[in-house]
Image (cartoon, rainbow, N blue to C red; front, side, top):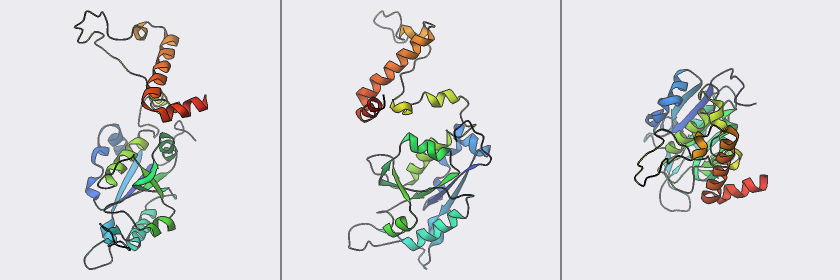
Amino acid sequence: MNNNLAQTRSWQAVILTLFPEIFPGPLASSLIGRALEDDIWKLNTLNIRDFSNNSHNSVDDEPFGGGPGMVLRPDIIDSALTSATNLVDDSPPIIYLTPRGRPLEQKRVKKLAVGSGVILLCGRYEGIDQRVLDVWSIEEISLGDFVLSGGETAALALLDAVVRLLPGVIGSERSLVEESFENDLLEYPHYTRPATWRDKKGNENMVPEILYSGHHRKIKEWRHEQAEKVTRARRPDLWKKYIARN
């Protein structure tokens, strides 16, 4: 299955969060928001606090073994997940957004885009009781080696990355093929008008001449060389993967 295949139904996202008011947020704007309006994808949010089973409406408790902070309780998260699975047509992956997860990569984003949807669990405080993560076989994903105040911001980023790959969201399929991380390379630099800009040193043109030469094969070769150059300089980890594959 690939992005050229027409979808028979909307791609579905269900968000479990203590702050449902955050959504859709920026996902309601631009191409992603238009796709939401056009029913290319659906978004449901569930407030974890609605599944509290105590008079104080609390969802967390102190960690066993002591230590700072609070931990989201497994019984409450379990109830929320059960409700979430009833909102989706199939059995999409359940992803917990956490700094200790595996780094999100474009290949995982593409795999999510050709599926039926995703259930995203947004953590808060010190995190979620490990038992519910194990019982539900939840996939743990991180946006990088830094810590956010909660999983909501990470969920917004993940959804933006996935939805833009759905059929009908971006007009040009070629734009997706030439992006960063395709073929383990970062994208080449871009230029546009005016051709001469802030020319204070007498340079006739600041844009590489090859780009307005009209020679498409040489332009393609130049862009590939530039992609290799920037990848080698900025992302040695990607460069190693690229060299190994080629």
